[in-house]
Image 1 (cartoon, rainbow, N blue to C red):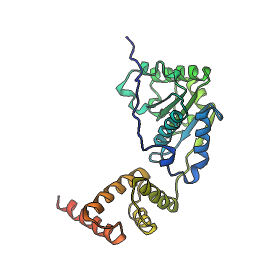
Image 2 (spheres, rainbow, N blue to C red):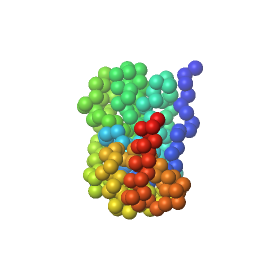
Image 3 (cartoon, rainbow, N blue to C red):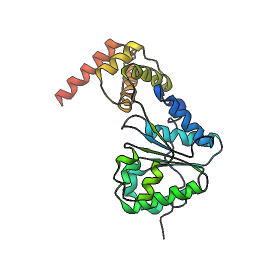
Image 4 (cartoon, rainbow, N blue to C red):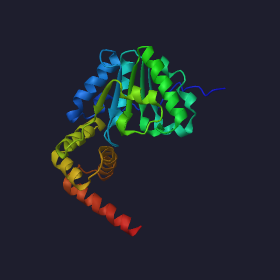
Length: 238
């Protein structure tokens, strides 16, 4: 018996458009929203580096679809090794399908063929498809020509990298969404001291928020310096 597609996907409640710091990527959000509503492109290919928020945006599209009474489905193709390609069977019935990390299955012919068949059926039914990848379609060694053609068809959007100034704004935005406040000075200190991807800075925010609550201290630069110096000392001991 072929493996049936899952009826539920990992629904991350905090990954909506309202939780995403757009910066210069606001036009991409607008294109995605129009696609979900059926007023824009039928298929959108989102290309971006790791940590730029591709998965967040695809989850946000599913939230947005449900808010507008559309059936949506999210699947991370990087988990393909846990399933057989038959897991894609029937997903074309959904109004909005979001397939994350499509580059993960490139070179696996059965998966390429299954994805091609899904995209073809989904398109014929007039449904919306949103795909993400770390690479552009022409930069992937796709074996199935039909899949390569379909991936190149439609609107291709490139996520822009946030500059340091926007990273500071993004940290302030994220902290506010998490229910606490950081100053521009604290944001600047974190960006300078921790040259990391935004998703790593998000985890850092959670850690320093817990630390400030435990110490009953405000999130100031002196407090952060003390916190980081303490962590360095403990790590050197261990």
